[in-house]
Image (cartoon, rainbow, N blue to C red):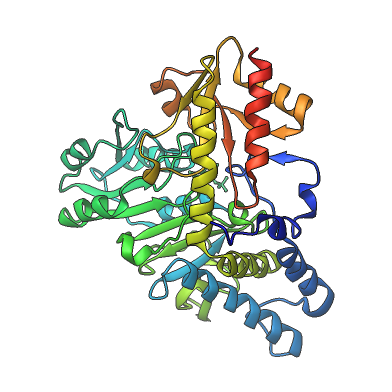
Length: 394
Ligand code: PMP
């Protein structure tokens, strides 16, 4: 992509300095306009939202509401409800706690899942809800035949990730949505690793719930999103800011997202998240996707040349994101990560990546080393990672 000016983008990220940050799947960096939007709130119009009628609350409420609109537009979800949460974990838990379960209901999920898209379902066992885990094939794709067999008439919900934070594999959500809807099951998608890297359209995907983290897409920490096709869950919390009327013995909930955001929200964070959406849209998610795919292919090809490195990457370049796991013969993953930091200022993640069942099933109980890319990384950084690993394994 000749027009992709990564150096201009990098000027918006003073934190990059001389560091090589390849841990973007854990959390990402925010560009200056995102930080500026939060500072502007503090400097100029800090006030509570959805309460009162004075000038400052008017501005704050309008901007906070508008941030929800921007997020809805970003994920093609204008007809649904965008709720601001703290992170993906909170979004998934809100659905797990908010649906009206009954004993005998089933949830189907996959071995690819992050603990955050597994434990909330497992806990429903207390209510007599069982969870079944579908495996993956040699291409790391969920076994669709097994998934289809698992979805029975008692299946209330299928919960799976759109992109794995360990293997980088992108799953076929549209096909899975069809299976779900043919059997009357709801579909929840964990988009934590998809949204930062590719265009996402929830309505095209055909899911009922879509969860992701603002902080992994250049938004502030403490921000996340729950998108729902319909406001069909019970709010987990009750209190101020989420009701239309309260009488001595009852209440009616506000329509829309407000009913799910009880209490004073993370206003600066929400506004910062809106600014992150604008920043990403200005570059373009298609372009980001293409640019990162180039870096990913380069990284996988280069790592694969070193016979002491084992790469766990999906074979189909069209079905992966820039999350690359590998192990190095004779080194614990943590040792590799420490050496990369000490020898070359390179930050990568090591360990089980909150996916213990997955790494166990891959026969890698110590986990992997994971390099995860963002739209501000460069070829030179990839090449330096590879050169340093070649050095370590020499
Ligand atoms: N799901 C996936 C696929 C993830 O990568 C992560 C973060 N590593 C999460 C869920 C949890 O995100 P958060 O910590 O922001 O709740």
